[in-house]
Amino acid sequence: MKKYLQKFAGLIILVIISIVIAQINLESGMALAMALPVGFGPLKWECGSENMGGYKNRLLFIPACLVSDIPELPDTSTITEAADLVTAAGAFTFKETTDTPIFIYATDKTVQLQAENQGETDGQSFRQFGEFMHPGSQVEAAAFAREVNNTPGYIILEDPNGIQYMVGSKGLPCTIKPSFTGGAARTDRKGFLFTFEADSFCPFVVLGTPIDMDALENPAPVGP
Image (cartoon, rainbow, N blue to C red; front, side, top):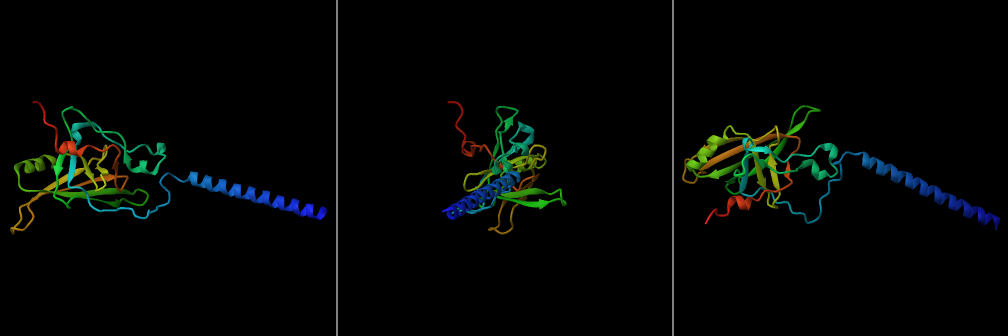
């Protein structure tokens, strides 16, 4: 009987030791996970995820000279979620209450946004760049091209899922280079091509508080 009790006691001790070791490993793993900076998580891809490329054929331009405050990326020391690393919080504050973002119609399938890595080792960042086409040769488009040619600001574009992206940040606004092509053949493209770019810490910046583009495209009538 004593022999069986000794074996049973030994088994209990082994179980306790196993539990202690497992707890230590679990706590070590949790400590390691907690030590990793926010954003260093697994990159998964859920079954059935939709991933349509391109952007909607409408944009917004906000001249930097018209605003006193803009959405900004939060301080990295305050970030707790990975999404916050690339999400600009806040809203645009216009100096004049009558000012609004400038709505721009773009030819379908001409709106682009890309990002490339730039800089030297230990000093790398991203160059966000893109373009869009506005059709025709209206004098209003030519006038806009002249004014935006040397006006830094912020571009807002929207993907098929309705997510809005902001190009340009405080101190690092977006610059725009307009050009015009009248075409040669009757089937050639005719219109204004606008290319834009901005330096950023991120490959893209999501606008945390989307802007109502529908209201800007079709503003409500004023007065009786």
